[in-house]
Image (tube, rainbow, N blue to C red; front, side, top):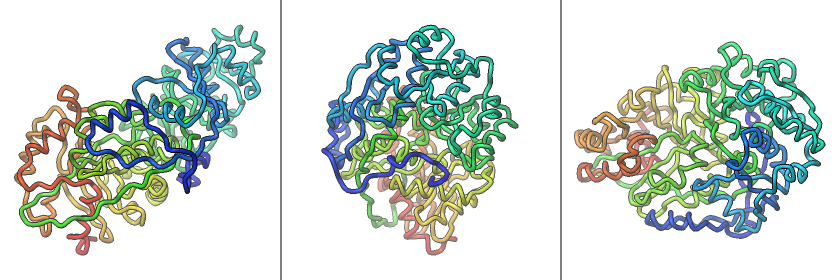
Length: 532
């Protein structure tokens, strides 16, 4: 991350304590009560430089007005007075209440004309574009370096009446035109891929970083952009077909971060957070007759989901079952940079009693990439290790397409990384629990999936398969099983956490359910001396 991901330094976790305890909202309290054992109280949060938050309700605005507000939000996000886009029932709701409780003035935003006048001193003018065309991305790219707001042609007369000059008219222009003429204006290392139809999400972040914003480029243009604005760029947003996008990103040494529905990232990266200390479990004794399994929730690379309904959905973090069994969650280490308060929230509300919430990186480390296509796996491993150190993570997830498990060597050689959890692109458990060793550290392939609709991937099917495993965890590594829990399955059942609960109820007696940290620790203790 360092050097390759040039975000502002406010995202580094503050040392020491300052300010007062960040109070959890009533919603948060309900979640804690529902989850069994109480979480470790969060540490006092460092004081924020934010003094006033103006809350905008996007449903009250036209599409053109929404885009204008987002570009304005990105321009002013580092100041004492900021703009916040309201969302109900998601993590952003909780974080906004925390900031209110810490003494920051949270106010309903005035009409848009008055809001523009409030921030007029930070705006040089406007970039004219047309909704639904490539020009919205051209305008988004240029607003940051020009200190301008994006104005759809329908708002031009109104904006000019307010005294904002039109600095540039990009109607009819596309993204490659912008790169050809203005490449030197764009911040290297950060790219935003955002559909022209998504006018009201993520664009604030692009403006705050003067990030080149585009969508739907062909192979040749995509590669040209990555090489021009690299090296090792981080791509925020989403690029259509998953495999094609991630392959393209990987081939230029990049990392993909699903974020196309994200809101308020430009503000959240300026909200400091003291990271709660994450307790690390000791490696327990195991004995003949036991099997050892670990359940890991997928899709933790998806920061729009982590910052959205993940925190409040009863199928996930708000599940009443959380805290009743050991559970491991993928999480994006880049949250330490782009939304440190979100990461602190999850660590601070994690279960830490008889059952523990554990965390590993999402695929494939610092961001989603296929290691088989990376031109420099050493550089990617370095960025991943830096991000893991910032976010207090010790186990990486690797989702690969083609290639083999030996391509995790660069990760295992990093001292910050204790082990790797390995998935193939399709299916995730193609290698059926295989273990690759390097310097006494394991890369472990998933053995089973909880994933609809196949019966083999149901609670009943997984429990039956586990019952057929050897039961000698000191001497037989086949006594261990990693189980990937598919985040988007089992909605009718009540969500993936309900599927985990049902699986555990069906497991044979003397099956030990552990976290990924303990799982890796047991393998290293009993088999690491003979491995790699």
